Amino acid sequence: MTLLNPSVSIKNLDLSFGAVKVLQNLNLDIGDGEFLVLLGSSGCGKSTLLNVIAGLLEPTDGQIWIKGRNVTWAEPSERGIGMVFQSYALYPQMTVEGNLTFGLRNARVPKAEIAKRVARAAEILQIEPLLKRKPGALSGGQRQRVAIGRALVRDVEVFLFDEPLSNLDAKLRADLRVELKRLHNNLQNTMIYVTHDQVEAMTLADRIAIMKGGKIMQLGTPAEIYGKPQNLYVADFIGSPSMTFFDGTVEGDVIRIPDHDLPLGTYEFAQRPASVRPAIIGIRPEHVMTGDNLRSAPYKAEVIADLVEPMGSDTLVHCAFGGQTMRVRMDGQAQVRAGDRLMIGIDPGAASLFDKETEARL
Image 1: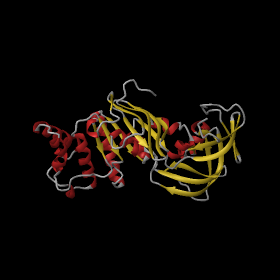
Image 2 (image 1 turned 90 degrees about the horizontal axis):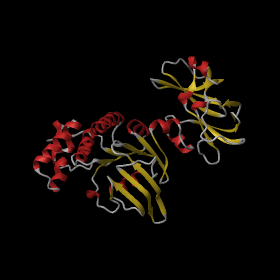
Image 3 (image 1 turned 90 degrees about the vertical axis):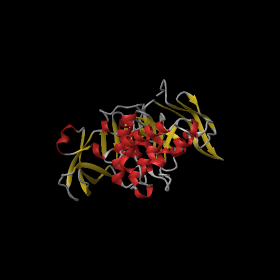
Image 4 (image 1 turned 120 degrees about the vertical axis):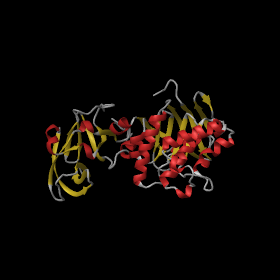
């Protein structure tokens, strides 16, 4: 998708360290006011890309445009960005207010304007009672709010976040995730956010760019990424627990996997094979039907529960199917035990098919 007036535009970007290519021919347009998440495992290039946008690393080739201006070789301070890092990087000897105002004072911003920006940031982030405290007297979540506030007072149009929640415990991460979503809704600034946590990506993003080996594997909305992954890597990366994958062969309107022929009548092919073709089908645990939903299932089979994981709102049942251990997501109140026989239903229309050789979506 090409945006007419992107807030940030990355054009033919390459970055190499010696013979090692870290970013390869990246092209990406980020819309004005968009929340874009760069998602991927460690070493995929997401933080490196963010650092190039910020001006902390120089690209080997390509260009970075921000708000219609070529900033490829501009200093970080000249790019009109605010950045929040994984580490809080607060000055321990200064109060919260001192940390918020330090950069503004160095930039000789008028005192009245500084007071106005600090008051606004403190109100948005709910840190007004903390302004006179020092970082040592704050919790991890409060420190991260201050770090976000330090970027906020710069009054810029583009914010960059480099895994800002990864140092926090699970509950704090969930709480601050909500605060970040609310912050974006209120400010409507462009935000680029790096994470390896798919829950953060799915809940925060307008669009997600999934990266691997310095390349973008798929760019789309959370619904597109989850519902129609464009390749096997994306399909395996998104979803918790992940899809179960079965090797098979597409023959007309059927995919044959060990012991089962699944009808493909409801599947929307991106590219239908012209002949018999080796393929992989991926089925999410939540797309396996049980109970009353079985009536609408195009394919039914009996399985034996091997392992049961009660998870409160859900129950995950492991069972043997098609030569694999398949997970089935059931209601949290489901009365099922290891050894029980279950009738399950599968709708291949909700599944994902991939070419065995290219790993591209069929």
